[in-house]
Length: 95
Image 1 (tube, rainbow, N blue to C red):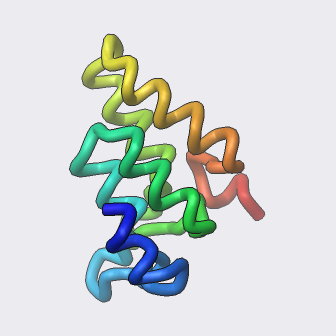
Image 2 (tube, rainbow, N blue to C red):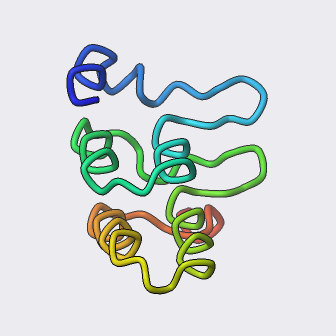
Image 3 (tube, one colour):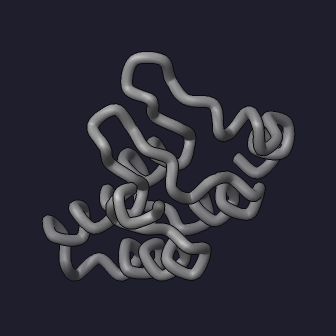
């Protein structure tokens, strides 16, 4: 993943999928529970507050997953990482 992230660069990682406006960071947060993957994407300098068509930000996705699996320490670590990088749960609060 690290090599793919470097090859794509920040601009490539921030590109949004046309129909849902998912970014790589959205997908990594939603589909995986892997701190190193999130860290790899975030360390490339991507925007940690991209807004998807359903108004969800990556941190909001992690919070939802934590509600379903409150004992998952990896989700807590991902949440801390995103918060340290300035992630918000609601785009309205980022303006």
